[in-house]
Image (tube, rainbow, N blue to C red):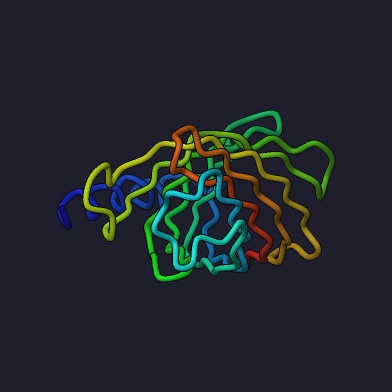
Amino acid sequence: MMKNYLILICLMFGGTYLSAQTEFGVKGGLNITFFKVDEGKFGNNPETEIGYYGGIFVDFKIDNGFHFQPELLYKGVGDYEFINAPMYLKYDIIYNFHILIGPSLNYFPDFLNRKFKVRADLSLDYDFLSNLSAHMKYTIGFEELSPNILFLGLALKL
């Protein structure tokens, strides 16, 4: 299993030095989880719960305002923690405002079965400074026990 994570990290960051148009950084913030059903084992089965996330990202500039931005995030909600790897197509709407969309690959080590889930992400990003941005992301869970999540956070380009 650890070998798969190392391969993913190498793929994400291996091309970093291939292009001067590539940036990388760290991000983190709060997440608000909206549970769809009461059957899940999420603490006292709340309708919503606040958690945290943090991780790294790489921004590969492609052309004409398009980017590819993979991320590797560690997330926690209640008693559960998981690894999230969104793969975004990013578009510069205007100079400091961006929209990101793509699949989100999730690994839940605490679950007994179905540890891997795929979700859809839609994110808005605003650059306050050349190296500091704020983002809001909404993740849609497709399965019965896969909640929807709203993320609010900051990103710092290194």
